[in-house]
Length: 339
Image 1 (cartoon, rainbow, N blue to C red):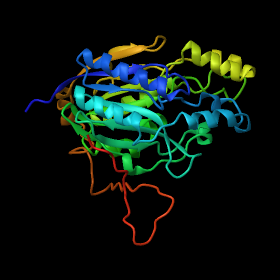
Image 2: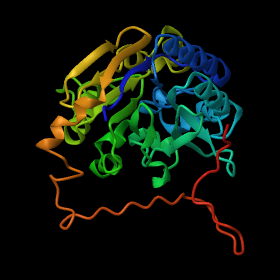
Image 3: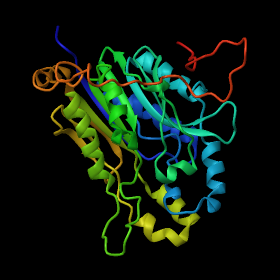
């Protein structure tokens, strides 16, 4: 039986910074725009609703209290009206959507996670993942996630999995998705490519996320013989002006940040389809999942090219919760409203 061919879209867009309602309008409009072009899988960047805390890269936490409050206020619940509106649209248009967002906690007004939902073509949430470990300065904003959302969804457009930013460096997390039959790997990223100052004055650059991201997603494609999507958000004029007005002492840092890249990779790690970096827009590509079959003949890490009698991977998929009460049912996963 032939595997599907699917048109995919990656939204290389800037959020309306710290404004969840205005950003959700962009989300809904972009889904309509991409779906009208025959797209069946639509991806939004890391914490697209409604901010990635770029300020954490260069400002001490004691100077960021007002921004932490604002990013918390612009966060949303996984079962809130914003996500429900995307679920309804996925069902109506029969599309799969991955949306990155800052997630509120029901038990702590000061706790937020770097999360995504992967909503299938029936409108149901197949994966709700919280970033396992916030990277570097991100620890000042987000709490640790858990393994409960490390799911690959089995949509009619293919088996789709995703990791957030630096998680794509974690070989065990990547293998967890491959072991579930992943055919399309989504990696979502922040808007800026160079957010780390050089460690010495003789170095010209810090860590270049653009190169690293292509390598990390490319490894998943080559090892898993799957297609890859890299989706970065965009620093627009309004975002740059906000950052500089808030912290004029770091104007040079903000002005010289390099934009992240949005692009697509084949199962051999080659670039295919559109590539967006220095302009805002929606990038498109077409994946023929039949192209994932032949490479398995020589390297199938979740099949004949492994030794599961030698290597054993155990993954804890229980949810982190602050307390368990006696005589109450323990829910290992969030319950979602089905449409």
